[in-house]
Amino acid sequence: MSKLKIYTDGACSNNQEEVNVGGWGAILEFGETRKELHGGEANTTNNRMELTAVIEALKALKKEGLELDIFSDSSYVMNCFRDGWYIKWQQNGWVTSKKEPVENKELWQELIDLVSRQKISFYRVKGHVSLKASEEALMKRYMKFIEMNGQDFSYGDFLHVTEMNNRADQLANIGIDEIRGK
Picture 1 (cartoon, rainbow, N blue to C red):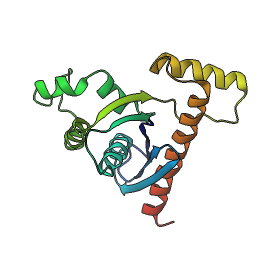
Picture 2 (picture 1 turned 90 degrees about the horizontal axis):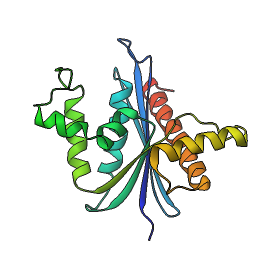
Picture 3 (picture 1 turned 135 degrees about the horizontal axis):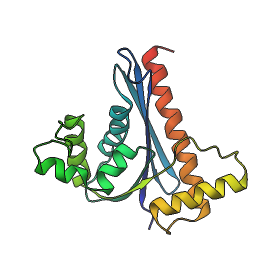
């Protein structure tokens, strides 16, 4: 039986500036069925958009207890769940190991709640990989993907995940354009 797969990306034009525009994109895929989501907001950060992409994808699910895979190029999101940062944050009263308040606490709390309702595996993807690159370059990226995520993915799986990650990036940019009024 197929697993539900979610591909997400966030983007921010003029990140770190006082005035900026961010966007997020997500693709929910079950077998041949796909649903694309996107949105954006003004005066945000890239990290907020990365979190929002995963939150909005999970909010779109109609059931709880689903087995699903989430693919993202956000080390911020992936490392939090893969390395259990959120567990320590909760234990330490939402303070980081550097004794600073956790940024984006409200989004993390919402995401952690949504994640707790499903059975999720998190997979890290290298962003902005061109599928038009040489076979040799793509094979090197594939080997890095395997190193980050384990041996369960074929080269064909890697190419598909990369294609979906690139599409999620496009959706995030559509969200940015919509906020800009383009």
